[in-house]
Length: 436
Image (cartoon, rainbow, N blue to C red; front, side, top):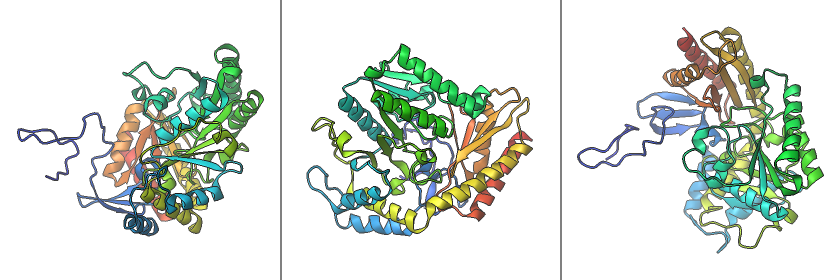
């Protein structure tokens, strides 16, 4: 029995339902999708500024990605890559080598961002012989045991199933808007506190890695200031600490650079990628130098489905489309257009005692709109209402942030200028409706 009701419940006939712990952001049931558009079973068309949480980078069902996956399904679907090798994974590795930072010449594949994060942590601990990991306030690194232990984007990701993984130490993130400071002040504060943490809680010789996103994802769509990343690089080099950059959401062109950390001058020791790398097919990877990767213990990497042949073929096609259609540059230009439009809405709907747009920030097609009151308190109810209202206006959006008061807009890298203008119009209508 096929139903359109997302929250179907068991009845007297014993119908099976989805877990009630899955919270739907919209009531939309997809019939089909193409490019920046989702066509619902309700007969409506929705401009998709969620892209599966930044996954469908080349838009829905890009014909070249569809063709590559369809062709591969007819050849081999699953060839476990520590048993027999397959061409798509070799081709993907070659294509990744063209865009990875110099020196990161060894790649391990998994299925999800969480798995890749755990693989990166495992490698860092094995390579250094040290136990501790430093993470930064507001970071999101996944939902599996170790990954959720590293996540501080909200308590819902780690609460209720302690004890979590030990050896995790938390340092402040330079969240300038929250502190009411300039970016420079926030960076100085966060680096000073990191040094204090290294002096008081996790000695450098006990610290295996520092793990950070180049722009916080679930933590509020906050770009990491280049000066902060550069400060981390200096400390990592000084103390022999592995610097891991989690590019799961910010990578693959999302920020208007191929990798989000490329807004700074740094090169990470380990880079983590997933989400947009295969336009919706589940595949993830970590990249490191061959010398660092070789310090892992034999047999410590593997997995049944990692580097799946169909997902790898889709990844090859995705990287090809991004290059051929100049999508990184498109993300930069369309992101500037989107941010400029959101800043105009901020001028119109700024914070009041009830709430309004307090901050607009982001890089490329990764834009966050923080709703707050005139005294700086989070306006969570307003943000939630706006996110819900956008659906009614034919625009799909999501919330994020520890307080849930940030609406995030994540268009596909193929989004057009006309679609950005339409999205701004629909988002503005939703804000006006809620604040009326």
